Image 1 (tube, rainbow over the protein chains, first blue to last red):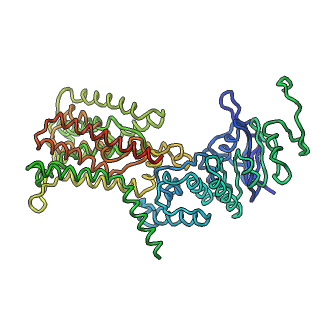
Image 2 (image 1 turned 180 degrees about the vertical axis):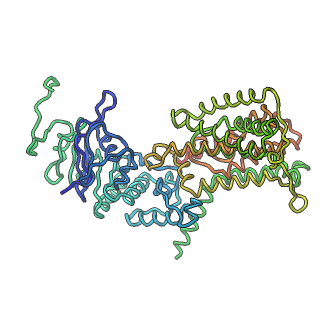
Image 3 (image 1 turned 180 degrees about the horizontal axis):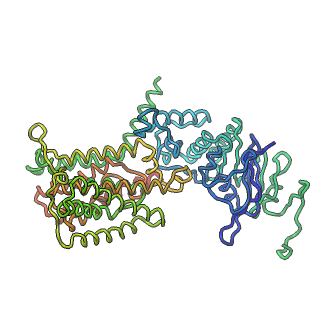
Length: 267
Length: 328
C-alpha cells in the first residue's frame, strides 16, 4: 500500500542545533496517525516540513509515491495537504467566511470578477456554512469575527477550513491543547468524521488518552527521528510513554525492550 | 422560515454594530450640531463647503495613511512626499514649459516610486515602517528644500489648478472638482479593501502577518502593493494641494503627516493594524476640519484647537485599546 504522504531521512539544522536527524515518516490512506514525542523532540519541525513551512536540509518527501519539493506552504497545499497550526493561523478580526477562504478567495463570474475583481461574498458565505454544517459544527453567523468565537469554535473553523480544501491529507498540530474537556471531545469527534470521509489525518498531540481514543497508529518521535510506530490496539499508553522518553526501545523485529540504566557515559 | 429571517436580521444588526465608522459618524454629527447651535456663522452652505475644501489635502493623505496603518505600519513621510510632488509639478511647468498634464503625471509617478522604495525597504530588510518612513521624511524634506532652493513656485497651469475650480450646484452650493475626486478615490479604495481579495489580504496581513503567510498570502507582495498605492495617492494629494492653494511651497504641510494620522485614528482605524475602514477616515478628516472651523467661529484660539485635536486623538486610541482589550 503506497503511503499518501511519506518522508525519508529528513534533516534540519538550525546553527548547531539539529532539529531533525534523519527522520522518517509515513501516512497510510484513510488512517488517523498520531505523532507523539517529548518537548523538543522535533515534532514541530517534522510537521512544518511536511506542510511546506520548513524546508529540510536533507531528505525526501513523497506524495502518493512521487517525490515532491515544497518551497512554501502553498506548494504543500497544491498537493492537497492542509494544515491546522497550533495557533490556528486565523485572522482574528476577520469573519468566518473570510478566514475560510483566506488566500483562495472566489471571484464573481464574468466581467465583475475578471475586471473588477469583485469577490463572490455570498457564495463564499454559503459554502462556508455548508462545510460547517457537514461537519456538524454549530455556528450561527458566517459574518461573525473569529475573535468573538470560543476556543473550540475557532479550532472547529480552522479544522473545517483544512477539511474543506484538503484533498489528500489534513495535518493538525495540538488541536486539543488549549481546549476544555467538552470542547476536546468535539474536536476528536470532528477528526473521526474527517477520517470517515476518507481523508487521512496526522494528529500531533501530547495528550495520550486523546491519542489512544482516536489514532489508528502512533508515530513516536524522539531526538529528531522516528523511533517506533505502534498501534493502540497492541500497545499500552505506558509503552508509548516509555518509548518517547527513551526508557523503552523498539527492536528491529518490533519487540519492545527495556533500555539499561543510562549513566550518560555509554552514549 | 422565521429562523432564516431572524438569522438575516441578526447578521445585519451585527454588521451595523461592528461597522467601525459608526462612532466617528456620531461624533461628527454631534460636532456639527454643537457648532450650529453655539455659533451663528458655522451652519451655512458656504461655510460647510469651505470646511470640506479644507479637508481635501489631509483627507487624501489620510486615505493613503489608512492603507499603511491597516497593515500595521505608519507613514511619517506622506506629506513630505506630496510636498515634493507639488514642487516638481509646479516648477516643471513654470520653468521647463512642460505641459501641465505631463508634469502632473510625472509628479504622481515620482510619488509612487518613493512609496515603492519605502515598501521595498520595509519588506526587503524587514525594518519597522516607523523608522523607514522617518528616514524618508528627513530625506524627502531635504531634497525638497534643495530642489526649491528657498523659493516657492506659483501655479499658472490650468491642469494643475483644475481641482480648485468651482461649480455651483443649484446655483448656490460651491463644489470643487477636488471634492468629487476625493469622494471617488475614497469609494475606489473602499471597494478595493472590502470587495476584493487584495483588500482582504491587506487586513489579514495587518491582523497577523504569520497567519496570513500560513494561509498562503504573499505578505511582501501585499505590503509592497500598499506602499505603492499609497504613493500614488500622495501624488494625487499634491494635485489637491495645488488646487487649494496655487503655489508650491517647500514649507507647506509640515504637520501633514501627523494630521493624517489624526484623521485615521479618529476615524476608528486601529494603530495596531488589521481593523478599520476608509469611511471612518473620511469622517475623521471631516471631524478635524469641522473642529477647526467651529472653534474658530466660536472665537477660540488656534493653539487651543490643537489641544482639542490632541485630546480627541488620545481618546480615539484609548477607545480602540479598550475595545480590543474586551475582546481578548
